[in-house]
Structures are given as C-alpha cells and as structure tokens.
Image 1: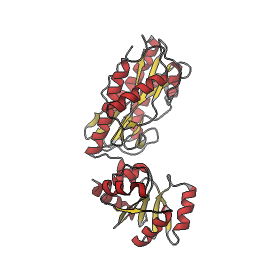
Image 2: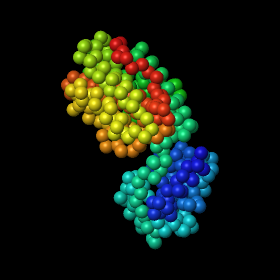
Image 3: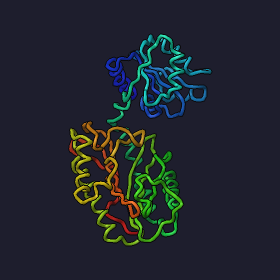
Image 4: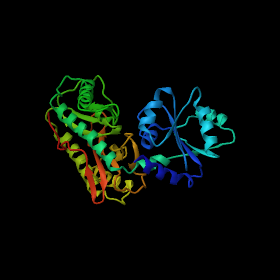
Length: 356
C-alpha cells in the first residue's frame, strides 16, 4: 500500500517542477508512511524516501515505516534536512505552503543554501481524495461506532441535562466502543443554539419542546467518522416538523443525485434547490458536504464553488441544514462512499424525526 503511494507521489514531482517533496502535514505524513506518532518530517525524491525524527520515535518509525530510511536528528531538524537534501542531490525542494509557517520557512531557507524552496499545494492531498478498500473499511468502522453512540444517547437524553452532559456521554460511549478518540469537538446545540452550525456543547440545559442538533464522529485507525442527527425533546411542533422535512427532502435529493462525473457544485445545487424553493435559501449558508478521511475536513467538497468531479472511492458528507436565529437549527448528515452506480451510505442511524 505504501509502495503504491510512493509510486503515485513520485509521478507528481517532475510536473510540479521539484526534485523532492518535504512533507510536514501530520495527515500526509501518516498517509505516506503509516507512522502514527506526533513528530517527524518526510522527504521523498525519485529514488529516496527518508523519515527524519527525534530519539523518541526512531524505533516506532522504523517499525511502522519500513519503506523509509529513518534518520535521527540530534539538535536541529533543519541541519539533518540539509544533509539529506545534499545527499539526494536535491536542487528544488517542494514544501507544503499551507503548512510551513513563515518562521519555519526562514529556518529552512537559512539551513539549505543553494537549494530552492518551491511552494506546493495539494500534492499528497490529491492522492488522499480517493480511498482504497482499507481506508473505506476504517471509515466504515468509525461511522458504525458513531451510529451505536447515537442509539445509546437516545436512551439517555432528558430535560435538565446540559449539552456538555450529552457530549461527554457520547464521547465516553465511543471510546468504550473502540474509538481511539473523537474526530472533532462534539457539537450539541439545542433550541435556539441549534441556529449555530458549529455550536459546540455548552452548559445550557435541555428543555422540553426543543430540537437538538448532534454532530459527532469517532476515530478508528486514524480515520474519522462524521454524522449529524437532529431530534426533538418531546413532541415536535408543526413548524419544527415542517422544517425538518424540508432538510430531509434536500438530503435525499442530493444522495440520489451523486454519481461519478458529477461535480460537487452540481450535487450541492440539488439540495440547495429544495431549500431555496421552500423559502429558506438564506438559512442554508454552508456547503453541502466535504471529504472525510485522516482529517474530518478534506477534499473533495460539495459546495457552490466545487468544480471537481466525483470519482469512485471518494468519501463525502451530505449535510444540508436550515438555521433560524433565535428559534432552531436542523441538520441531517450522512457519510457516503461514491461508487460506480451511486453511493454506499456508511451511516445507518434512522432519519425520521425522533421525538424523545
């Protein structure tokens, strides 16, 4: 698997005008090497693949990244990088321009005289957009833990609990069920706080008659799950139910429209049209979805600006929402794999409006 990724990456070096690529983004490092630790940089050329790390991770890197030459740096990683670059004959070294800070660039520039630092963007990320069968299985397992957590929390939620109580219960359950951790800070937004799309859990107490937006995901083998469900604490009002049904119709329209060759903009438009025709276009202010993998937000995107065509093996969220300030929010999110004939939905939690 790593060998294939190295081959694919090396094919991108020459078109990018570089002799080698310095990889510093943690997700890219893990994708290319299999290393799960927290420190180290990678240098890949047409002939060499080196992993530079410190004493703490030398043994781990040697075990997890056997395709790479592991090199221990003593004091300054930049000095070791210079030695690696000179040995490999690198004249133009690409770096991830959206990761390297200005100070790091200054440090590397000073340490690499005679070597041109070339800003690059999206080289490894492009490889990550299409998942292999192992990655899809990890994401499926992460999402299954999330589904189980949703089922569990439905038996726990009651008036008087705080949003933080609910978030902690979900996190505890996912960890107990095999998650390495949470993919992002759990979002629990009840009542009028539901109008905040990323309203992370607060000390607000749940009250009868409110809708509760719950957005969370587990991590399994480094890969993320991501799902959102909105439930009613008590019987929903006709207005709450009507808005919920609009969001559900929008999601179903998008799910049915996903096919290889369609652009993210086209799929976003399917859901957006339903919401706009219902009179709530101004209340759906975010994109329809995003890629999920080693990061919870990655390419491809489903949005009004997303021109990239979908391909089999891409994993994306489909999450339309309506947000009414001072009143409520509704979002429904599934995690799906693009297939040759449509989608494979990894989220199995029910989507009819649940009244607790």
